[in-house]
Length: 219
Image 1 (cartoon, rainbow, N blue to C red):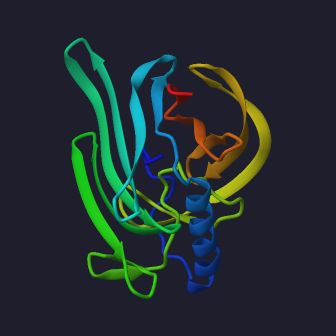
Image 2 (cartoon, rainbow, N blue to C red):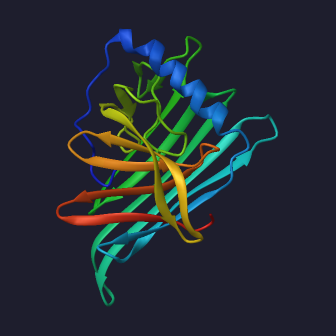
């Protein structure tokens, strides 16, 4: 998931982390071969908050295009008091993220970035070269112990702690399912669930005393 607020301020990884990050990128994308679209209804303290959709298209050249669309809103009648929008496109080739563009609107502040993978396998963003990282779009999953992810709002490295909490039950529109439970922790703790195929099926976190719950619509 793109962050409604960043889990941690961006920080750069030491080059020693790059090997484990590259391994995770390949593993995650391989697990998501020919994935099904993922669409969540998002709830805030039990009330409708918006939608988070991840849709997949196989291009003619064999690359996987991933389109991510998040729209969240709090309002009183016609008056909007909070709005969050995020649109991103990831392109994957043979288990590697090869390019990404993203635009985020968060409480009136808009930011954009784009990056591409260079011939040496590193990401290039606005002329700056950084080590390859798993994007924080969540759909591709994470390896426990991964030290950082790519913040998909800013395009910057973001240190995190990721724990594997084993199997647990998560609610979907079609009813409860058993899924692998991960927890990503920074200044914000996010719980994520993945079914036996590796498909992202659940998400929950608390921010500013507000409980945010994702419920998979197309289970």
